[in-house]
Length: 267
Image (tube, rainbow, N blue to C red; front, side, top):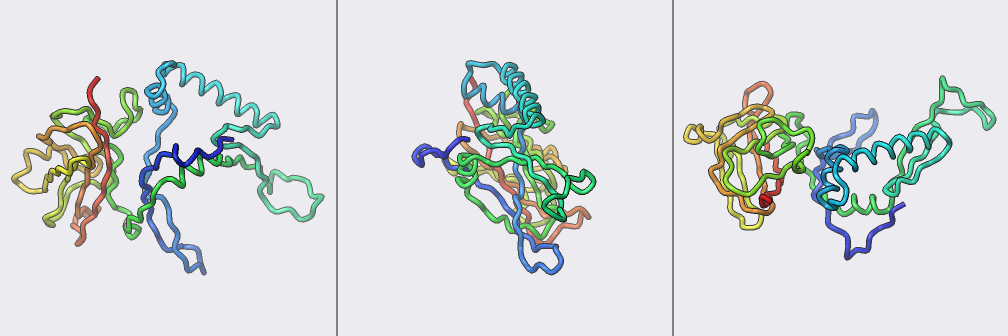
C-alpha cells in the first residue's frame, strides 16, 4: 500500500466541517460527531481531474481503464484474493456470533462483509485536514451550499471543469445550489456575501427591495444573483445568511453557511 509522504511534500487538506450531537443510544451519556457536508465526485469527475493534471491519456481512456480494472477487482475478490489497491486494501470479515470453535458457517446467521483498509498515505491525507465544529447540530434545516457555478441547474458530472470553479470576468449571473438556502427574515445580515480571499474585497447582497433586481432566484435549492462585479483569478468565498425555516416563520437566529470556489483564467 502507499506509504506516507515526507512532510515537506504533504499538501494541507481543506477544512472538514463537523456537527456534534448527543448520542441517541439508551444509557449512553455522550456526544458524537459526524461530518456535516462533503461533496461527492464520481469516476467521470476523477477522470476529468486526472486528465487536467496529466493530459497524456484522454478522459474516455481513463474511464474505460478504470472500469476494466474494477471488474478485475470484483473477480479477484470472488476468487479468493484480497486486493491491494495501493490507496487501500480489500479484506473479508465474518460477521455473526458462533457458539463454539467447530461450528459451521450458517448463512442464515452469519455473513461475510467486504471492508477496505486505508493505506498510510490515505490516513495521512485525512489527518492533514483541519476540522471545524459548525455548532449547528441542533437543526435539520441548516443551509448547505453544494455548488457555486454559472449554470442554472446543479451540475451532475464535471465534463468541462470540476465543481465550484468559474471563469474570470464579469458574469451575467451566479447561481448557488444546495439545500435550505432561501433568504428569509428581517435580520440586517440576511443575504449573500461574496469575498475575494486574496484581496479581502467583499460584496454584500442583502434581502431588501433595493436589491430585488439583483436577486433573480430565491428558492430552497437555488439562489441566483446578478453580481455586477469582476471576478479575478484566485480563491473566493460565498456565504449565505438566512432565517429560513420550513414553516416559513423566520427563526430568531441567523443560519450561515460558507463555501469557497475557484476563479480561473479562460484558456
